[in-house]
Image 1: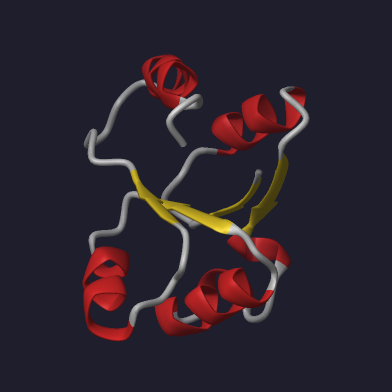
Image 2: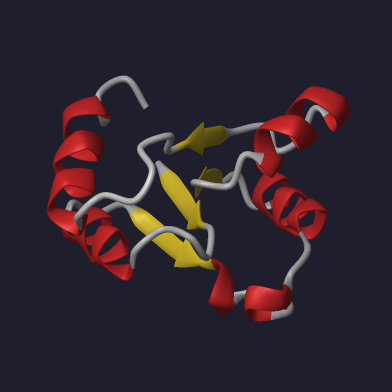
Length: 96
């Protein structure tokens, strides 16, 4: 699995996923960094076979309207401590 982490997802989660040998890219490493538009993030993810990992509900709307990104995992857990977020993601990795 390869992930593209949106700006709203903690760097600690990126480090955790990388420690499990998952390729994980931060939006600040591509295109216009944190200024990259959601639609451009979706296209980049689709072109590079990446799963978009986000807390931004806009991506779900884009998926419904435009059928992109092809792979999307939304984190609907509000603002949690990073340790709780990592534990939740870890628990659900088999289904992702």
